[in-house]
Image (cartoon, rainbow, N blue to C red; front, side, top):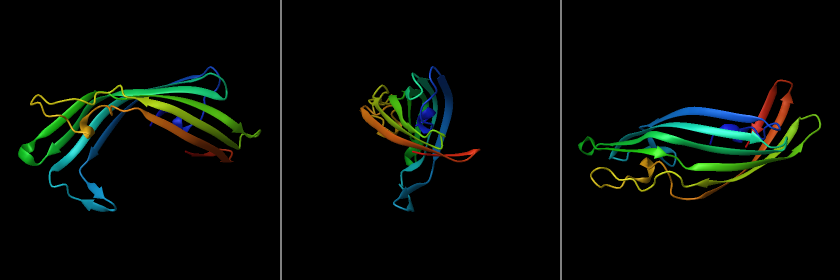
Length: 165
């Protein structure tokens, strides 16, 4: 998750826009706490660009949306140097955040978050050879999700603030 989810609510009538790029690469996998060799997967990677929009309706209430596009999601296999590639829109999330407590001196604050992730991304993609792409290569999940959280913000010193989600 990205955006202001880690920061509580925005000030009244403030709009926050975050545009980001994320690259992932993995060639080491674990089963429990030990490295595990799949014997078939060489590596996986993805390139993702996203947009997060947040708006503070009041000083205690913020609405936020988050979505993006997978430029690619790739899995490389040992078998005949086979490669599976997916791409497309990701799922969209919509969050409501409410700050239900802020101390008068702003030393501590609590914000509750609730929302839904909508299945807007593709989850039934196939290769040119009519092979269904595995879930890890699809750009979407095909499922609705519930998002819930609690943000605790503590100001320990004048210039240091701790945020716990």
